[in-house]
Length: 155
Image (cartoon, rainbow, N blue to C red):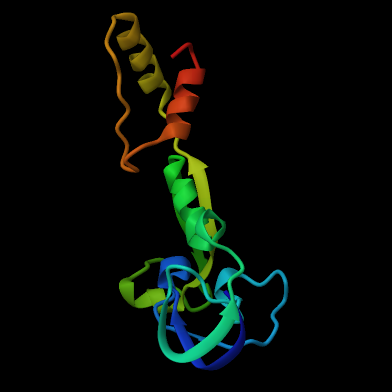
């Protein structure tokens, strides 16, 4: 939702940005390339208003929302990873829970988690022996990985 009026509006966006504190929202314009966490003029599906009030217009629904895009990647069997950065000049080589507040969310990446070559060979051997193979993944279903596996080596 793009806001055109906001009064002391703060929204908790951790589901999208990983930020541990609510973000102050205002209708002032931001640069068109602003990252998700820097879009102070937007409210997103799947986030929670913690204080204040705002009025705006809906700009996307369903799979066209940010949370919808994440769900689409997961539903396609992609492994979804979050990227973040922190100031290296003050950081140690170790990362602890206390360091999370210092991380800046950069974005999400969805990638295909392809089966290992030996798994493809094993599936092919089982199918030649008349065994019906089912792929079970942590993501509950992995259509893109299954399509990739069946498209290679005659599996």
